[in-house]
Image 1 (cartoon, rainbow, N blue to C red):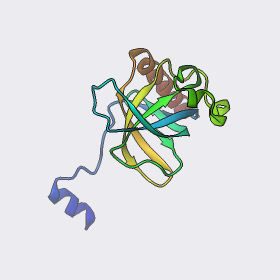
Image 2 (image 1 turned 135 degrees about the vertical axis):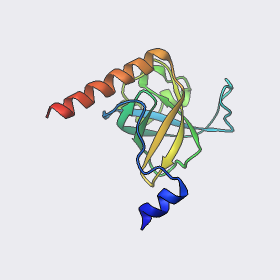
Image 3 (image 1 turned 135 degrees about the horizontal axis):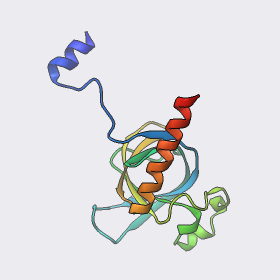
Length: 147
């Protein structure tokens, strides 16, 4: 019944991904942006917290979060080596953040969210970081298929 309704409405029942994704768990620092418009360089920061990745791909990732994110929000993701704000450097959580997951801050948009996980789409990411995430996702995916 539901499949018939979805077919009539034109909703796709199968979505094919453009890029491979693979499981990868790493802790990072996330900061919510307020009033962010894509393409602007001035950032207004709001709440910050630590996150853990579940899977990564060239275009986005799935993360855990402490029930603070809603679809449509923009966030900045940082590794330990690219923290810039004094508050972040002095944060008690900085000890658990991965030191070298990314080379520079990544701006991402929350595409979907539940109470403790969400999907992110990268909005501003360096080419080197994109290649690194693509390599991680392909390697992780190959390891799973071989098991």
